[in-house]
Image 1 (cartoon, helix red, strand yellow):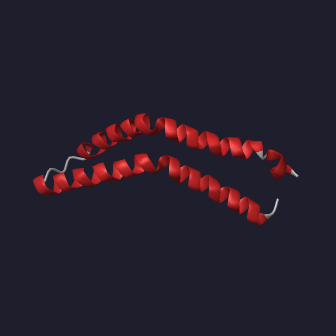
Image 2: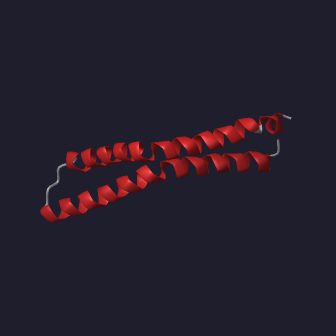
Image 3: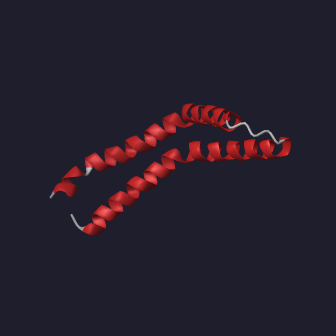
Length: 89
């Protein structure tokens, strides 16, 4: 195994991780921004007001995008294990 191969494989793993977590992260960011604007306009500085909606949105996103995330991770794992003979020797 060459260093270029290992770097490419690590890059694919990072890309797959980012692709799988992107829907939840984007939705949490949007909800956090909306809550922050709401807190700034009403001057309510309650910390739990920011966390509870984000947790709920992330859980809902996990339910909605769960099958796609599972397929993405399974495809990456299948390709990794299917080509294992190339990686060993």
